[in-house]
Image 1 (cartoon, rainbow, N blue to C red):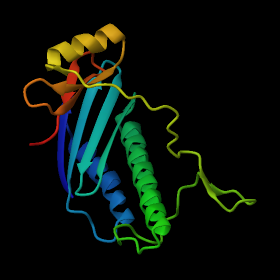
Image 2 (image 1 turned 180 degrees about the vertical axis):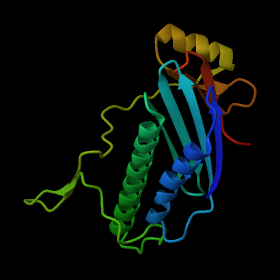
Image 3 (image 1 turned 120 degrees about the vertical axis):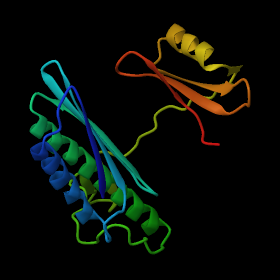
Length: 192
């Protein structure tokens, strides 16, 4: 893995860099071959809180987690735990998908890593129950009105939502505006 570690309001010491690399490199044990991915780490100090954000884009999976704590080393530990949970969850979904299709799973993940702890089997039915399973409880359908991003932000604020889906008035692509934690806005658009 190639590490790109940067700090905001914080000097990245050799000790911090080594600790991040040591902890994040432990994620390699979940894969058959060590992924050749870039690891983007952003560390910052916000008043008394210290924040870390880790993004690992891979071909079939995007790992991203952030954590805030008063101690940077504790934040690093917690963010790595989040990334491990994401990998285990993804592995369980991939394995379940291939089991349902009666096919062989692509050997992306190691076979000897423990499954998620929160996956249980109902003894009566033999069906797997997962406490973290995705449960879609409502579906909404609506017409995407053509507009620009500024108008979409106004619509979103008017509705009191933190995201808004719209159709771009120039080329008709579906886009999403969203409100960020810092109070500013973001735009998600498809790649050309």
